[in-house]
Amino acid sequence: MRYISAMRSIALAVTPGMPIFDLAVPCHVFGSDRPGLPDPWYELRVCAIGPGGEGAGAPVAARSWFATHTPYGTEELIAADTVIVPASADVRGDPPQELIDALREAHRRGARIVSLCSGAFTLAATGLLDGRTAATHWMYAALFAERYPAVRLDPSVLYVDHGDVLTGAGSTACIDVCLHLVREDYGTEAANTLARQLVAPAHRPGGQAQYIESPLPERTDDSLAPLLHWAAERLHEPLTVADLAHRAHTSPRTLVRRFHAATGTTPLRWLQGQRIARARELLEGGDLPVDRIAELCGLGTAANLRRHFTRAVGVPPHDYRRAFRAREARTPSAV
Image (cartoon, rainbow, N blue to C red; front, side, top):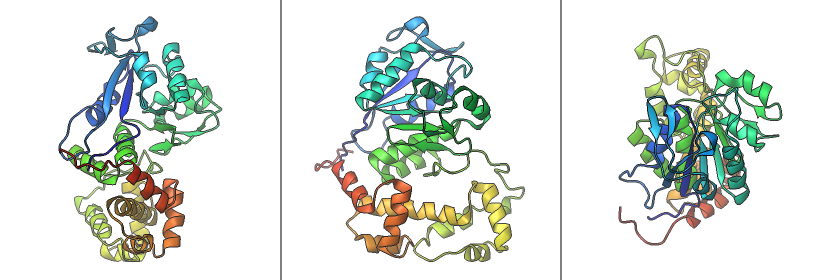
């Protein structure tokens, strides 16, 4: 189907000295034509905010050996549906006033504002995060809390989404944030398709730990990948920690320890996240009644699904399906 997203135009704010990775990820995700994805896709505009107020048409050096040349500036940034603020070059300095003013105006117009990594410092400078929970790279937590005490920083999570404002952690969490935006705008199927093309995890919940002490097991035969695949195919079953431990040929206590070391969460929380993700797919892709979806996801009853789904997604299943269908056009896609 051809989709109509409410957040199709994306402005990427580029400021002097910003890290290349944070610039490259949204360009790769939102600015590339890919097979199998909804049509129309996003309209990405790289918007230059140069030193001394230079904007559109002025080259902005992201690094001494890399510069962006774009015809877009603050005007296009303010007009966008979504504005992405990549990492800051100097977390101890003040962001350009022109950028702060543009972000405030874009938000006032109804734009969704997103920060990646230390871009949260820029968002905090606008005042848009005051009184809210926010995420940033864990290495900057102490400095962020010192500079912006009005913001409730959670240095452990991958991202925090308030709907109108979203903040993400650093490095690979940029990919998680971008996939989350695709999932919100175009649905789970599109996000999963894109994740496969990027060879990235399809969905890491925002509350998952951004830093894991032991990301890899010492022995390759200790990998949990086969277990996770096995469990993901049996979400309709009432799986317990004991069931997972038995499948992994280990004790429940050892499994919990290994699970947390590998994923940053517990087995039951991981299962819950997978069940919610499966519910989203079923709500988007068909007309199954909510009670049947609850059974297929292993959440038992419609009431149980409504309670957990609303807590995780922010809206009840019926409202989610209605909102998703409202974004669908009625004509087939040419793709």
